Length: 299
Image (cartoon, rainbow, N blue to C red):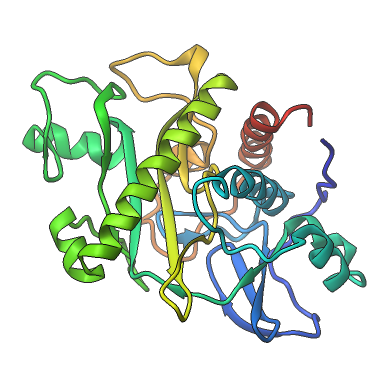
């Protein structure tokens, strides 16, 4: 499977004949009437700061991984992609072919005000919490667990979805109060099923899916859809299975390489961020490409 990766990063998307209605850290959204055009730039953020230079082709890789996973996820629940998606994108962007592989056309839906996180391993903020409290947020865990150890079972650990700043962990009970009991149960069940599906397919490709984030939205009739991105290196913690060792942090298929480099600097983690050197840019492209190759086949 071949994709056209640019040599220079696409940092913003302008000059389209559609109204731009929002701009996130990576994606820009355009109004198509009853639908949205979502285009992934090559911007990269760390510690909630967008770096001044991007990763050439990152938006293409993220979009293609997400589209591949949406196809798998559709067997579990509806997704926000429109029908005849690929043809619709090509037709809509026929005058902008360089944007096709980094674009999605999706239904307009009402996003839920939470992020649905499923953790299968003790890592990241979960490991930090366990070291302090012996728990994974609200959940009791066995004593003596080690960093990166597989949990007894995957756990649903939702967070708030902050417009600014960091998302904050909430309990399942608090999440049910925000969403309503019925919607909460639907989201929790779907999230655990999606994680199970993703973990099994990743394992078959020699990759461990340690944890991931899902987002959901509803239409006017209250029907629930999987939205945003799904099981990408930006929304998930992927580890190469052949290098996995319990008791330490793991090499990963995500932007951890960027974070690790930033941690070596005398930088206060406030904007503006520092320019990423070529070595960091090239290694980040490499890990994203390797994840896509393993998951989807020859790249």
